[in-house]
Image (cartoon, rainbow, N blue to C red; front, top):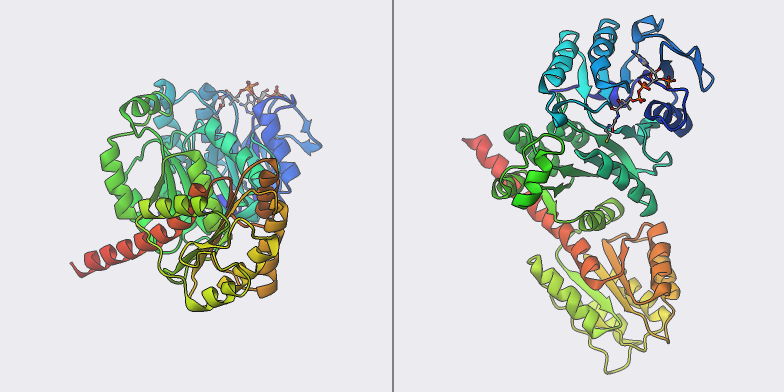
Amino acid sequence: MADLRKLFYPDSIAIVGASRHPGKIGYMILKNLIEYGYRGKIYPVNPNADEIMGLKCYPRVSAIPEPVDVVVVSVPAPKVPEVIEDAGKAGAKFAVVISSGFKEVGNVELENKIVEIAHKYGMRILGPNIFGYVYTPAKINATFGPRDVIEGNVAFVSQSGALGIALMGMTILEKIGVSAIISIGNKSDLDDADFLEYFADDPQTKVVIFYIEGVKDGKRFIEMAARTTLKKPVIAIKAGRTEAGARAAASHTGSLAGNIAIYNAAFKQGGVLVARTVEEAFDWVKSFSWNPLPQGDNLVIITNGGGAGVQATDTLADFGIFLKKPPSYTVEEVKKFVPPFASLANPIDITGMAPTEWYYKALVAALRDPEVHSIVVLYCHTAVTDPMGVAQNIVAAIKDTGIRKPITVSLIGGKECYEAIRYLTEHQIPAYPTPERAAAAMAIMYKYLEAREYVSKRLEEISKE
Ligand code: COA
């Protein structure tokens, strides 16, 4: 078992290859680390400079007068072994190797060599071929990605570097707060399972998401995923789910994407929720990150349009989730203000003439109804009802009742709907432009509960054997 505490809560970080030149990776990592607010000691290491960004520069790690916990390495691959040797001798605990030019281009020997040297000194390696790592509880942004990552409860682990950086930017755009972003690249030493093990027990992390091309040790991955699933959801975007994709992955990080059927079976055993697309994964992440888990299976849809309600119902059915009759308290409350032609089955259709306050009243009723466990709110853009007004009423209903239940929303229509979605996003209410996405983001919470149950039973059976 890897003890990752000092990677996430280091007293000091050295950047080997910290550069004086803006635009270089070693410059950006140092800048991000300083500006994101890391409070431990930062040591730039560069034999060709005395000082960088106002910090004294050291020629090598072993010249630093105090012990260093983490060494971020950003020098060309052929120089990495001597850096690892020196850092290991100096007692560093982790080397975060940014440099490319290892297994992904066939340099397996060089990669094995750095791991061998590191292990000689009890040091662990993250990478190589990575963009670094973020851990917001310790204010660490040791990446050359965007600086202003939002603090939150999502741990994101990416095997792909460039896509990982891009997704890091997307978390900022989508207002998704993260606890961690880890680039694991070639996984020469630390791998997915090590991070699962850490995040399972990390109180700062509520949901874990992986971008995976290939897994090194399938059995251990399943075991760690299962243990994590018992505590929090694990989502995977599995790249290489077609033969063509698998070939592309093999030439990328040098790992075999393997047979997708085998992966699917493994993911099922570990309770992993597999997203087909980046969009789907982010939709789900918002739902898990911002919602509590449903406390029962009575899901109610509130809509002003029959068609949107049907689309959402179909999507739920695709996930194996079927709507029940809406509970009587909610129905009686809604009956008080809707016209007689409103359909009060589930979906509850408050009709196309619904003003914004009907959304407020219907949502308040559903929130107060102890028999309603989760709510999907749908709105089709009409000229009689302002999308922003609907969004504001949704926020007000939650605030006024003080009740948090799982809610997903879809505002379907033009530009004003996008602004209203933005408003809801800022209030951490998962909102989407289509009813299918809102329904799927709710359905996945139920799929998680099923997966947790499945894993729990499976582990119980194993323990009896
Ligand atoms: N110890 C410490 N610093 C050293 C050094 C050593 N042994 N040898 C050289 N340096 C200094 C250099 O002087 C330079 O500083 P300067 O710019 O102030 O002169 C700095 O370290 C960087 O070295 P340089 O040789 O200029 O390398 P580079 O910045 O052009 O490239 C990498 C280094 C690691 C970025 C590059 O080799 C690489 O692998 N790039 C790809 C990274 C990547 O894409 N990773 C995957 C992400 S998804």
